[in-house]
Amino acid sequence: MEPDFEGARAYALARLATELPETITYHSIQHTRDDVAPAAERLAHAEGVNGEDLLLLRTAAYFHDLGFVVRREEHEQAGAEIAAQVLPAFGYTPVQIEKICRMIMATRIPQSPATLPEQILADADLDTLGSEHFWQHSEKLRAENEAFDGPMSDVQWYTTQVTFIENHRYWTATARALREPRKQEHLRQLRKLLNHARRRASDAPKSRLS
Image (cartoon, rainbow, N blue to C red; front, side, top):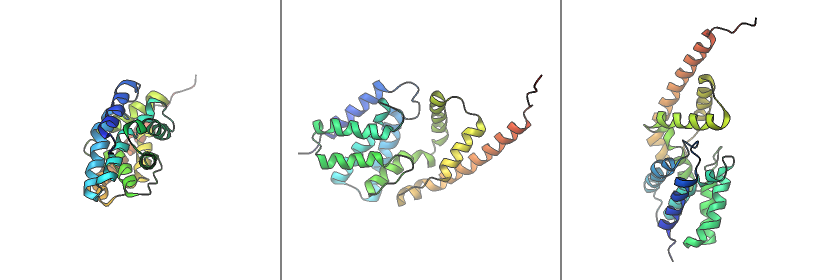
């Protein structure tokens, strides 16, 4: 019997819509529904993934950040645990659930996907690095991080972004072709912003001890 993908998808989206804290501005329902899931399907079709593998990939895409309803740290593990708990009720077999959980865990940083579906979900999760929406999503991520970790200076933020992108790689040939050139342009722009921020910081009046 075919798993009830639509039921599983509705379950994940309902929890993302109702249980995420307002401070989760980047890892939101929009990130899952409007960015990662469509990117995963686009990459899957281009990479020749179909049938059961595609169904499991689509399921993993909707569950990949569901762990945020439980905790921010190790949210991938929390999401995999939720998937393992609830997917049997939607007709997924233990073998299918194991594959889904591995895909979810493949999105953990640093990424280390083993199979093609895992590589696709890893690339879909960070599709935004090379998309036209990068800057809007970057601001959402900064707001989310600051809500939990406190304010960051521009130097701190741009340093974090530059380091992350310098150490990132796309795993599939399709993602590299579609997203790598624009990702590199974003990296060049971020380096300029970092240099400007450093100059502003060095030029700022130093506080004097009285």
